[in-house]
Length: 114
Length: 113
Image 1 (cartoon, rainbow over the protein chains, first blue to last red):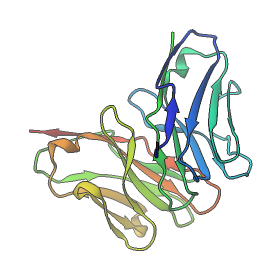
Image 2 (image 1 turned 45 degrees about the vertical axis):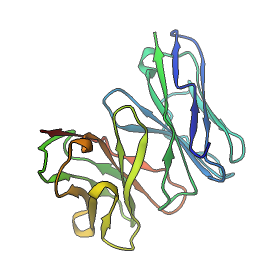
Image 3 (image 1 turned 60 degrees about the vertical axis):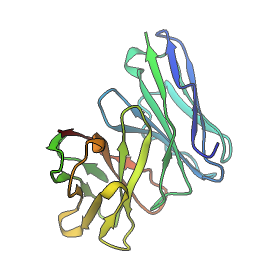
Image 4 (image 1 turned 180 degrees about the vertical axis):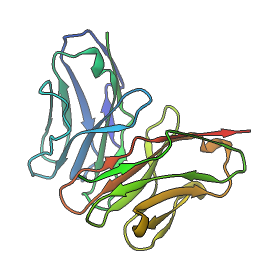
C-alpha cells in the first residue's frame, strides 16, 4: 500500500512478556518516528530515525524499550518485560525528512498489558 | 528545550459558531508548525502547516491558522463549526536539522447541535 503500515493492529499480552511492534514506512521516506499515545492523552515522542544517522532515542521511557530500523525500511519497536503502564496506542510515522515535511501516520498498534 | 503548548484540553462550541484552538510554541529558532487532526478511531492526518512562506495558512475543511512571531502562537480557527469537526486536534513543531516532530497535548473539540 501507499501509506504507513503497522502490525499488529491490536496486541494483548501478559505482564512480563516481551512484545515487538512493526512499522512499514512509505517507500523513500528517510525519517521514521515512534510515538506513544495513552488513553485520552497526547502523543509522547519515543524515538526517531533519520537516514543513516544515529537515532534520537531521547524519548524512550526506560531501557525496556528499544527500536531498530534497517536502512530506510522497516522498523521494529520492542518492549521487554511489559508492564501495565505500557498499555497505549503506539503510533509510527514517516516523512521525507525533517523540517517542513509532513509526517504520515499509521493506524497504530493498540497494546494492552494484562 | 523547544516545546509546544495547547491551551484547553477540551473545547465545546455550537454548530455554526467560531472555532478557536490555541497553540503556543517556545523556541529560539524559526519553527515549522503543523496542525494535525485525529477523528475518532482514525489515524492522524495533516490539517495545515506553516513553513515561513505566508503567515496565514489555509488548510483542509475550512480551517486556517495564523503564525504570529511576536506572540509565538499558531492558533487554529474555523469561522463556522460543523458536527463533523468533532475530533482531537494536535499542534506540532519541527525544525531544520535532526530534530523530531514534537506534539502538544491535544485539544478535543466537541460540536453541539
